[in-house]
Image (cartoon, rainbow, N blue to C red; front, side, top):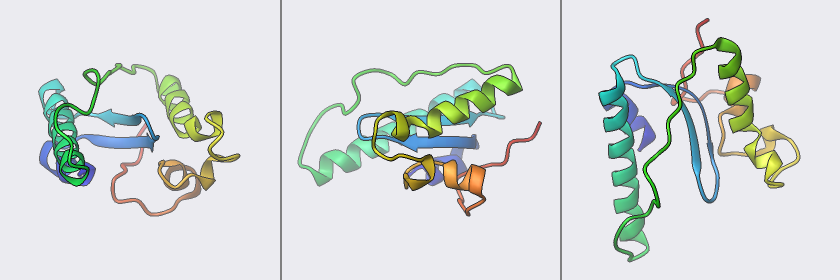
Length: 122
């Protein structure tokens, strides 16, 4: 789903981490805030519909609207990526971030292939 909406709305994806109760996405939207909002709306709605269908549920999946923050400094962006990718370590799911399958760490730091991610350009 992320790839589908990436193609449709054009965000650059620099990092991610899927946890059991929340998701982190580090995105940039060259097409503006409306495109970012449409990306998140489509992604969240499609995922909720698939989840509800699979588990025979109804209604909203997410408690609140997604949170977004503007990053203006390159150093903060690197700190943000580190924070996102070390989430599984802080949650005691793994001892090192490369052991967690659902994050961008292996691609971004170790160079593994990942079609979702864009390279940072400073």
